[in-house]
Image (cartoon, rainbow, N blue to C red; front, side, top):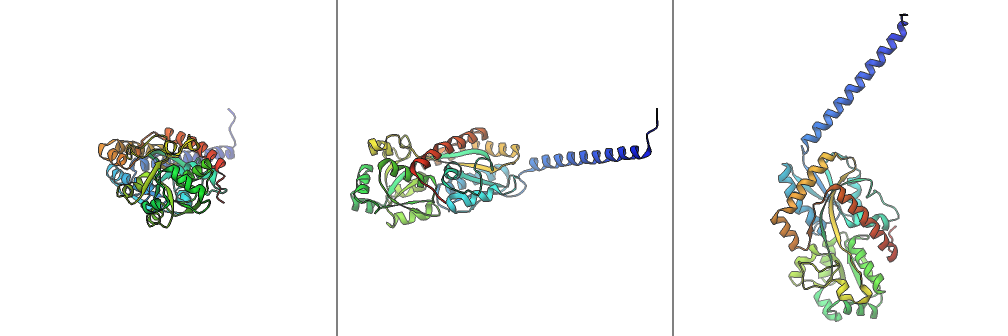
Length: 344
C-alpha cells in the first residue's frame, strides 16, 4: 500500500477531531434540552392576559392559574398587558423565549379576527404561536343600563332596532377594544339591521362596563361571564345573547336571532378563549399543560363555576385547537369584509 503524505493524514485527523467535537456538542445540547424540559417548570410561569382586569379573558385566566400552580408546584402568574385590542400582549408572548415560561390567554379577537381587521399586525396569530388548548367558549350578551333602556322605551331587540332607526347616529356602543369579538358582534348587528351606532373602544371590558352601568354609554355586546354578576344584580338589562342557542346561564333571555326578526336570521357571534405558547415551545411542555387544563376543566367544581358564568369549558387537544383557530379566522375574515370594519 502506498503511504499517504503526512499533510493529508494530519488534515484527515483534524477533520475527525472537529467532527467528533461537533457531535459531542450536539449530544450534550440535546441532553441539556431534554433535562430542561423534564425539569420544567423550575420557576414561575407567566400567563399574559392581553386585556385589563375584570373582563372574561382575565376571569378565565385567574380561574386556571391556581389549578396549574397546584398541578406543577410553581406559581402561574397572571400578567395583564392591555392595549390595541389584545395585540400588545399577544406581541409580547410571540417574541418571548419558547421555553414554556410565558403563555398567552388568546381570544377570538387576537387569533380569529385581528389578522383580517388590522392593516398591519405586529405578530402572526397562526405562525407565531403553538396552540395548547381551548379553555372556554362563551356567548356575548347585548346589555344596556336599565334606566336608560326604560327612558328609551327599549324592552327587547326589536324595540332597540326601532330606536336606532329613529335616531341614526345618536346612540353609541362600548367595546373592550377595536377588533375584539365584542366590537365585531356590534358591527355584524349593524350591518344586518342597516343601523348605525358610534363605536367607543375601551381598554378592556372592565372600564367599558363601568361607564355602561353609569349611563355614560348606551349599549354593549359584552362577553357573558364579565356581565353576569351585573345582570343578576339588576345593574344591567340583558336583551339577547349572541349565540345560536340560548345560554343555560340565562335561559329566559332569547338569542339575537330569536328576538330580532327576519333581518337577524342566522346571526351568531360567540367568543372563545384559549392558552397558547410561543412557536417552538417543546411539544412535551405543550402536552403537559394541555393535560392539566383538560383535567381541571373536567372537575365538578370548576366546570360548574364556569357554566354558572355562562362559559362552556373546553380542554381539546393542541391539534384540535389549531384547527379551531384556522376555522375561526376564515369565518371572521368574512364578517370583517362584509361589515367593512378596518383598523389601520
